[in-house]
Every structure is written in C-alpha cells, then in structure tokens.
Length: 121
Image (cartoon, rainbow, N blue to C red; front, side, top):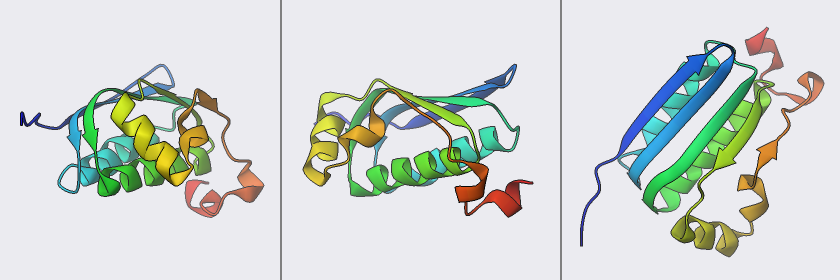
C-alpha cells in the first residue's frame, strides 16, 4: 500500500479563500484541516473554495474534520464551494447520508442563525 503524505495549503486573495488538501485525510491529518480553514476565516473572506481533488483516502476522523470545517465556514457567513470529491470520499459520504453536504456551492448561514455570530462580530 502506498502512503500519501498529507499536505494542506490555505490562501486568501482579494476576499476569496482557497484551501487545498492533498494526501490521506485521517486522524493525524485532521487538525491541519481545521488549522487551514481557521487561518482563512481570520482574514474574513467572502467565499472559500475547499479543493479535495488530491485527497486519496479519508477515514472517519478526516470526515469529521471536513464536517467541522464546513460548519465553521458557513457559520462565519462565508460562501462555500467544494470541489474534487473523489470516489472513496463519495462512498463514505453516501454511507452516512451526507453526500448532499459536499456537492457544489453552499450559501452561508444567516447571521441570526449562527451560533458564532457574537464571536465573529
């Protein structure tokens, strides 16, 4: 079995953020997902693209980090676009009935609905 080391990259330019994940997204890599997304949200972008094209494997801990990151982005009032969901991650999402959460673009949560609204003000 070939092990693909995990890397994450976070960029914000002109109000648009992009987080690119590459490799095996597992328990060891999960904190890096949260860190990359948090680094972008601190800069208050209007949108965030989450590129999963390079993710070769994702376990339950990795999936949880993606769900937490998704919620953080939407609660921050930032539009989210997810791209590159591969076959293995698609199967995992389908098994838990969450495939619709990672398709295309998702509008940000309304500020009144956000549990983080006071923290982000």
